[in-house]
Image (cartoon, rainbow, N blue to C red; front, side, top):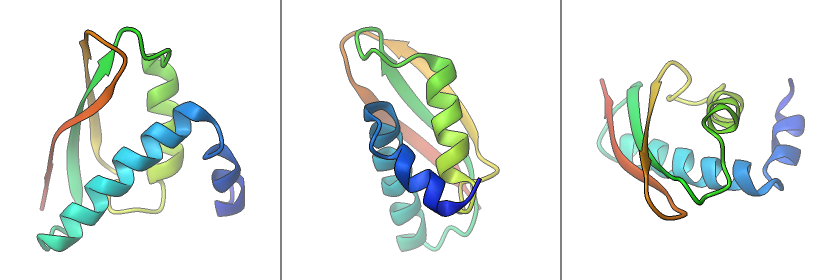
Length: 91
């Protein structure tokens, strides 16, 4: 899929949440001189209307050409409706 196709996905509400979190992680990683993100941990609210499968799909699509492309995405269920970045690790 091309980059143009990905930008169209960003208009979807779920993809926007994932793009925002992924963008924050990559920005913070670069600021701390991390060149490769190996793990990202998020909490996914049960009332967020985002399924784990759709979160993983959006993450895979949006991180494809970033320093997070090989990262393991760990998803922990939580209460509420938020998608919360808990932590990330890198090299």
